[in-house]
Amino acid sequence: MTGRLRVLLPTLCALLLAAAAPTAAQEPQASASAYRYYRFTPAVIFADGVDSTTLEVFTAGADIASVEVNWNNTYRRMYDDGTHGDGVARDGVYTLNGLARAFPPGHRLNFEGKHTIWGCRVKIVKTGGSEETASDPTVGFVLPDARFPTIDLGGGLSATRSAFFIVDSGGQIFPNMPLVPLYCGKPFPAAFQKLYSVFPDAFDFGIVMPNHKLFDPETYRENVPYYVAVKNDVQHIGMAIFNETAGFFSRGRLRGMIYHSWGYGAILDHEIGHAWGVLAGYGLGMVYETPRPTRAGHWAGWVDVDGQMSWPAEAGGSLLGTLASNGDGTWRVHPDIEGTRPYTPLELYVMGLIPPSQVPPVHLLVNPNYSNPQRITAQRVVTITIDQIMAAEGGPRVPAYPAAQKDFTAAFIVVSDRAFTAAERAFHTLDAEFFASDRPGTWYMTPFKAGTGGRGSLSVRLPVQGFHDVYLPVTRRGS
Image 1 (cartoon, rainbow, N blue to C red):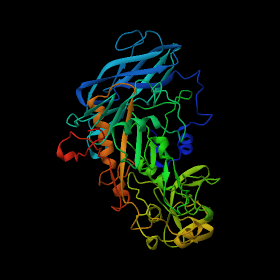
Image 2 (cartoon, rainbow, N blue to C red):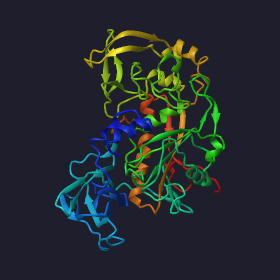
Image 3 (cartoon, one colour):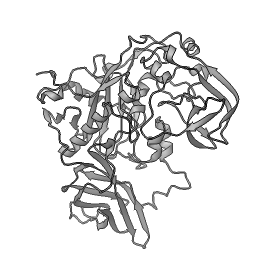
Image 4 (tube, rainbow, N blue to C red):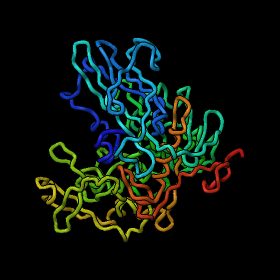
């Protein structure tokens, strides 16, 4: 997943799509752009200088003299003649196989761990002599010692201790990878049908991820993360009670599905926060969206909730950051500090992790003046207390703290149209285990436990027999 806006700002799909899209004046016409999209096969390799991948660059096909990829700081020719891994000659798909690399010196590891993503540059020379470059192609690297035992569950299904893998060769889940039509809120029940065919109904969340970046078939832009609410059994948080678990083959446990684009899992902390809607206080002007959404929203940028789920303040068409109080009747813009955004007291209350008495008042700024982003003033300030929020929603949260659920489970479900490699399995297992760890946030993802200040926990360990005792094995369905 690339693009700073995609990880810097809270994400409802519309925001991300708008942020990723160039303006009409910036966007080249389709006929002028030779580059379309890419595919690495496999999408992740061990960074040992031996394990290799094949890059395909899909182009418009016409008026192209050559295509090159900058690999290991050297531009190398790609081929559309049926050689070097190219499947079909002269079809506009330029290919180069045997791409191996040791870990890039000085390159940052994801989450200070054992894996990372790395983007390379592609240069397209047109027959008229002009050049076009694309920095989109991104591959995953895993350090050679990061390997996880895998259990074959049959039928194209397998699992490491913390990630479930589906070989979807028939395109039942993601047809025609990597060109897959997606829209915000699209569910993937077939992925859950596979999950529950081998596992019990033991998950609060299912995180569905492709094993390669997916692109819109018409625009070739990357598809981006979103949350799909499956069940809500919490009263007075601004969201109705509903249960659609049967449509996901769950017998009642599943709370929600997260679609996450390929990459390192950034903003998972934000997406899982939508399980509690972020709709409390809508009638008081605290929620950004209009008209009122039914299941997902964001705290408005003119309210100083300053949380994981806040929409950024906006001025002059720019998104500035969340609003924080200076404590002296002025406010400041609080840009996201990479990976260190916890859930705020109001969010923790809605999640059932603190009592209402621990939620301080928030302030709604009417006609704010953003001319000095560090000393923001307003024509009028409305103070909103937790008692007012509870009254607006019909009463205190039910179930209330401390009876509310604090410990949650998630299944990381990874889908590919071909067999997974050991490096790919390791890459996704590492992502899953970081999100479930107690480490501080980094790279725009805060583990659930850290985000809640230790008040809540998330487990991604799968109930599979056959792993060593340290993998916490429990009985799997059918065994």
